[in-house]
Length: 349
Length: 236
Image (cartoon, rainbow over all chains, first blue to last red):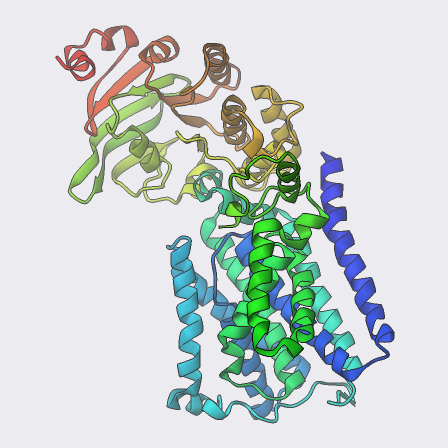
C-alpha cells in the first residue's frame, strides 16, 4: 500500500519539481529577454488559472465555467483596494484572493443543488453577468471605472523596493513563488483526506454521502479554494499589467485556458500547468499565421482529443489513475492491434 | 429489543406515495428481509431511512429520531447501506474505496488503517487492494461495497439486492458472508432481495410490501403461505 502512495507522490511531485527547476533557470537561457519574460509571466498566470479550473473540473468533477469571473473579481478587488484605500499591494493581492473565495462560496451555494451541465450554466451565467455589471452605472458607482476600466493600478512594491515595468525578471520570480505555492496547496489537498472526499463525491456522491462524507462542506471548500487561488492570481495580474477592464472576461481567453486543460490533460495535475505553457507559447509562435491561427488551434485540439485523450500527462504517465480522457496506452495498443477503435476520445465527453 | 422503529413513514413523489404509512420494527441482531414486486417502494424505503429522501413520520434508531438528518449524519449514527446498482468510487483502488468509509464514516477515530484491513480481510478481498474498482468483476464489486460499508463500523446494515446477477457459487458465498456479518460482527441486517428462496433461508422475519404498503410481516415459513402474498406474486 505504501508503495502505491509513494509512486503517486513521485509522479506528481517530481513533475512539479522538474517544472520548478526548469522555470528557475529559463530566464538565464533567454538572457532575460523582456519579450520572452512577459510571455513566461503570462504562462505562469494562466497556469494557475488552469490548475484552479482543473482542480474543480477534472479533480472534483464540478463542471464550472466561472473561473474567469473569479479572476476578474480578484483583479478588480485588489485594484480597487490599492487604488482607493491605499492598501499595500501584497496585502491587496491576498485580500483579492480572500474576497474571491467568498464570492466562490456564494456561487457554490446554488450549485450544491445542481448537477453536471446545470452547474455549467449557472457558473457561466455568473461569468456573463459580470461584464454588464462592471460596465453599468452601478459598477461605476462601486468604482470599477465602467467601460474605461481601472487605470494606473499601483505596481507591486515590497518593503522599499518597487517593481518596474521595464524589468520583468523580479516579477517573474515573485510570480514563480506564488504559482508554485498554489500548486503545492493543490498538491497537498489532493493527497489528503479532503482530496479523497472530493474524488469520492465526484465518482459517486450517493455512496460518498452514505459513508459519512459531508457533501455541503466539501463542495463549498472546492469552490472556496479554487476561487481563492484564481482570484489571487487575478489580483497579481492587475498589478502586473496596471490596467484592468472587462477584456479579461473575453471568451477568447476563456477558450484558450480550456485548450490548456485539454492539451495538458484534464484531471491530471499538474498537466494543466504544462498545458498553459505549451498553449501560450504556441499562441505566440503561430502569430505569423495571422487569421489561420485559430483554425490551426482548433485542429490541434481536435487531434489531441482524438489521439491523446489523456493530454500530455496521459502520454507522460500512461499507467495513471483511470480518469476522464486517460488511457493513452490503450489507444496505442488498439492502434497497433489494427482493431477498429470503439470509442477513441469518447471518455472525455 | 428493537434497534429500528419505523413509524408511519410516508414518502410522496407528487401524488404518488412510494412509501405509504409504513410501520415496522427491526429487532437487534436479526436479519430482516424485505420483498415485494418491482416498484413496491423497497429501495425508496432505504432512501428514506438513510436520509436521501426526507419522508414524513418517525424513524427511531437506537433510541433517537433520525428523520430529517442528512445522509452523512445518519451514517455517523451507525447505519450503513449498499446500493442496488453497485455504486463504487470507480477511479479509486479498492483500498481507497474502503478508506472513504473508514475515514469519514466514523467521527474522531484513530484506528482507520486497522478498520480498512479488517473490512478487506473480512470480505476476502486480500491481495486485491490495489485494483482500480472499475476493473473489478461484479462479485468483487459487491464484496468491495460490503467492505466499504463495514469500514464505517455500523450497527445496522441495509443491503439492497446484494446478490442480484451472481453465479450460484458466488451466491452461496454471499449468503455465507451476510450470515457471518450478522453472527460474527453482531450486525443487524435489513436485506431487500427478489430471490424468495434466499430470503427465506437467511432472514428471521420477512416483510412483504406492495405499492408502498405493508402486506404482512412474519416468519418466512408463514409469509409464503399468506394468501395476499401469493396473490401479489402469482397474480391470483
